[in-house]
Image 1 (cartoon, rainbow, N blue to C red):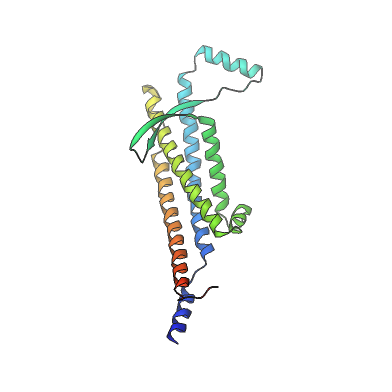
Image 2: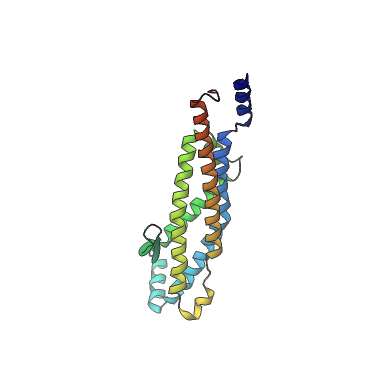
Length: 212
């Protein structure tokens, strides 16, 4: 009788694990406003830096490309990238427009996941929990790389813009700090989900709760 009562008690505290993991996914939406702010600041900082190189020759080349409908040249910056494992920093050449595109894509995805009514959220919710967990793990890993890139851009523009315009450089500290905090909270929820699922598996193996 006691075992039966314990089993009933266990069932009462069981929660919907799909809800747990989806709440962790929805937490990513907290980054969307910060990513929008980052994108705007990066564009402004890049325009500020490019203005330094706006010589008469560059103006002529720009007019020539416009006249013949040619694409503008790819903007690449050599930014510092920190390695958390080795505590060192290397210089990495990155495509600026590609960076902006990736940020915009991530921002749109996270905005869509914010609403339970959106097709993106519902499609995600329809997947198996293991697939959702894998998605969340991948997103956090990619966000970590993005964060390192943003910190690199922040340092790069502050160093490269000439002295007369340094005060006009828009720092990314507020946004990167907020993004990092959101990542920490999301990872905590992911860990809570994983711990709960593992606990339930252990209890089932011990026969304390029944298989559903």
